[in-house]
Length: 154
Length: 90
Image 1 (cartoon, rainbow over the protein chains, first blue to last red):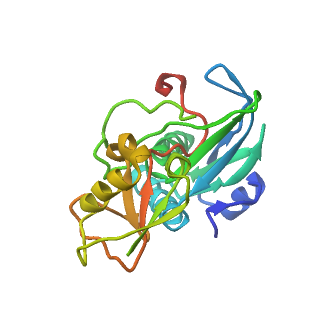
Image 2: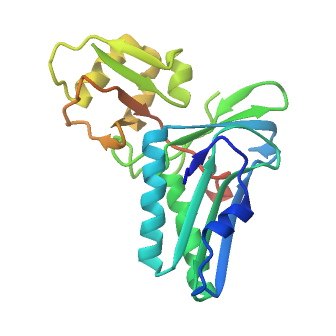
């Protein structure tokens, strides 16, 4: 299964792929492109990824989430390419026997993704300008572990 | 020669997706390559401390030796997922 894709994300496919009769709960997180960022109007967004590493990071994060929270299923897909307002950029699905574990595991998966996944987003603003959003330095950079995120680069 | 690949804002600053740089050592360290880039592409200098590097699927550290047969990939701070939480926003 491809976790990094140029195709629109489908929540029903994700739920079908994670069906598990031992589970009494599922939690899905969806990140979608909104029409504003830091007080500016946003018309769309472009996501780019370092593919070879991004696929591995997501696969390992799914396994780690299952082991850490004892949940039965975790599946993550991330969109790349140009996205319009309201389109999903990321979906995280977690299934577990009980809802508490599923909520915690889902939050962990999306929060950790934002620290590890080599993906970058470029905002296209309604005034015609564009800029890369700041982010979190990956683990081996000199600045890894710095608190706070960078601002935007325009 | 070593191929260097840029992603995100680094691509914009370097004005290219890939760059070939001459390396004098058969297997320079990541830090030596970054030092070379500081001279060759001054626009990258301020960003390099926050850049992580990779070869293939894996991150490499500053002191690691670079395999010149494979591109060295420069990865700026990441911003995947959805928008950051308000408390995280700068």
